[in-house]
Amino acid sequence: MKEQDEIQSAHWNTKTLSIFTAFVWSKSENFSFALPSLDLTHDKFVVNAALKIILNHIETVLPNVVEVNCFSDGAASQFKQRLLFRNLIQINNE
Image (cartoon, one colour):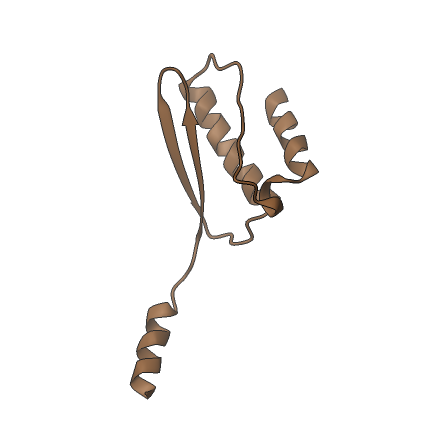
């Protein structure tokens, strides 16, 4: 039994990471995003950082973009907060 526990402990003793996924579609092309992070909190700050990266990429690749619509799977801790809407407004103004 000791050997089994040691093997299991070695197998599951790995570093974890968080992956923020997103998909962007437009008339001309589509983009998939998988942004890895060592921050496992899954909070509004991680979402804000990921959205900035994605929106900066969109602005670079599609400079004439006029409108961006955001959809969520409804994760309350990540997307249903007033800070997220404030950040989206700030990003829009930039």
